[in-house]
Length: 468
Length: 79
Image 1 (tube, each protein chain N blue to C red):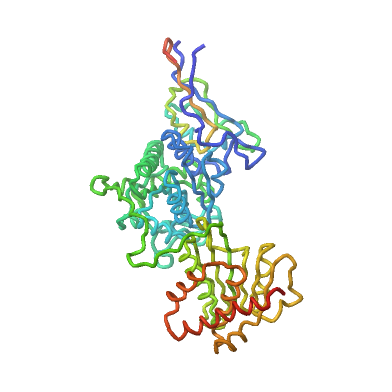
Image 2 (image 1 turned 30 degrees about the vertical axis):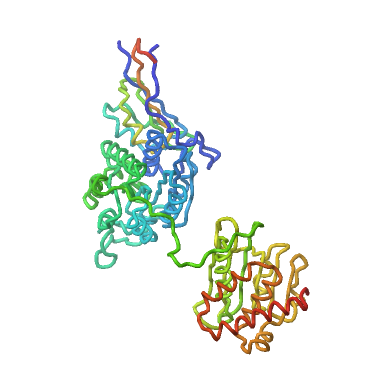
């Protein structure tokens, strides 16, 4: 018996079984003759050949290829519509050794995600984008895409795309080629055997460019959508070859010379310009305050948060300050998220605070239930309203606005009374750090004096009477 | 008679009968059979001989694992 060995077989970068559909775990969800399957195979083959399966991260988009993570045995992140370049940027920057392959269709990349891809390319982010252009919205049922060709029929252009009404198709490669950023741009097609073999080469070259840290690499693949085009798979393949390539010419559009454009050396880490105030020593105990400050606009909610963050910075902590407010500068609701941590801050968002600072009752009602059990609640009012009290948090209620009027002569100093109360209760930050922060953020001498009075009043009042 | 340089196998249950491999095979050794698989697709079928192992059918097939292409191991060759 003659002996045979396999030369072309399922890539190692695919899962051995696809778990999405229990009844057929050997097939993808794509329609017969779909270009996605072919491009998946070319990407998987490139990953195999380049030996990067362990560090490849595939970004799957919204569209027919949303389920790519069921197929690729690599890192996978499925992202919001059009946002793959933003997520790819984050992943590549956080994990520079990962090989990030962003996979997007034309409805995703060239419509809702146009801004993301333009800016990622302009920033010359070092990841690879594979752009599937089938000139139509496939998954949603055949609407006109930005890449649909003039005269092409779709459900939203039953008489064909008209330059008078829908204008001209978007040539993404050519648009990106106007930018200085990209290192590699090529357009290929799945129009026949030879074109498919070229496409394999292009995808590999783009990933190789990323591995060589040459910068942004981009491959557009003209791809058939037999089902939505209403053609059989062979006719659809021919349409790619004969019609699409007329509008979208194939070839290498950019292959930046690595010698004339050397790989940029990353800048040194940020340092304060000379003259910055010296940082105080780090606290001995680990600190992780997740603070939410809330009230109505004009109460100094954001300033209070900024002061806490600034003082934390002075005290040598990692900090973040994330404001959230309506369009009104006064009287709308506003809140901010503050983190003070002896570790690196992973997210500036505070969903479950361990310290809630509520400057009015609506804010208390809105956020009290989000406070972590065992956390602290500071409320500007005589008492926590009985109908929203919680037994598992430590609550402090004081009429801080009237205290501000009595002691500092201005209700606007309510936020500083609050700061005094919080400081006295928790000893969040060294007094010197708070003082430094006030000096750097409050520029008027008059207000600095008022705010100091209010701060002291708050801390004295807390000492006199506190827990409710 | 010398054995063929190549051969292929087709997983009939994964095949969707798109016919791209039939179109791609230069010697014309592939066809859509009259047999339906459990999904109701007419599956691609290899004539059984004549394959030279070029692998084009593999590249045009949209399914990752349906087609496998083999090549003859030359007699006396070291593995």
